[in-house]
Image 1 (cartoon, rainbow, N blue to C red):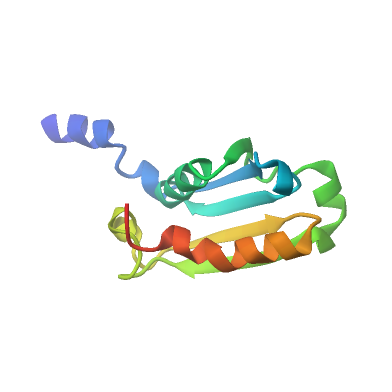
Image 2: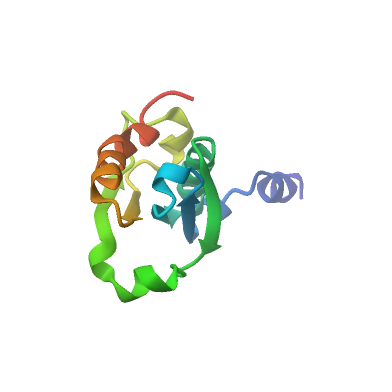
Length: 127
């Protein structure tokens, strides 16, 4: 009984369920930047919290994307699939070996391309 209660309180098991979340840049210079994160719930939540701390807002859940992005797949700037490993944050080690996918969409290819290059640092060791 106590073990079941602890299991329910910690949310264990829920962290492995698949989840997708879409974020939109809150920065005026990159306001057309959308990021879709898909993977285990715990990893997605970690990344979403890190991105929200760096000027992103929640835009939606699931497969939803803005209509202009859905119609124009060519607006996908990059797609990064990352396997959680030993070099990633200690907060992600429970999902070692699991993968997360981050898709970046936008109109301004140069600023979004820079974002694509620094995105792996969000997964890096640290906080």
